[in-house]
Length: 203
Image (tube, rainbow, N blue to C red):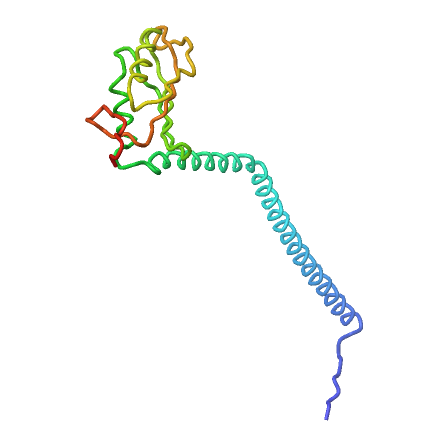
């Protein structure tokens, strides 16, 4: 059984109460709309910030791509150089080593000749070690003496001065040179700093 509700408020009071209620509903709706707008704005700003960050990272990767390529090319060249260096002892007979070749060459240096670089490689056909020397000589006479010392060694073949030009070192004129030679892989060490061609039948 539903009891009837008696409304004792005057008509003006009732209208005033309804007006207050309407204002509260409008205010609440406005607050909800404001909160919704702020949330949407915050989400949009965050999405835009993430997108800007991703674009910045992408641009940085694109800008650094040439640098990465250069690094990879440098690593490839270093690997190639290392492979050639490792081939120095590849296929060498026990009677010869790279250190023996280096010791023999440095033992022949005249007083006024110094080496600035040395490259050693081995070839299969023919089996030999190819040596390229870079250095400086005080005079052309010193360079000729060094060349004659190398050419006079039985273990060295094809001694050639492939480059000879005037240079300067510590304010003094010098002769920059490049000398190449070959060492057969059938040589053996006689004593530290000297080598000779192995005789027939000698392992």
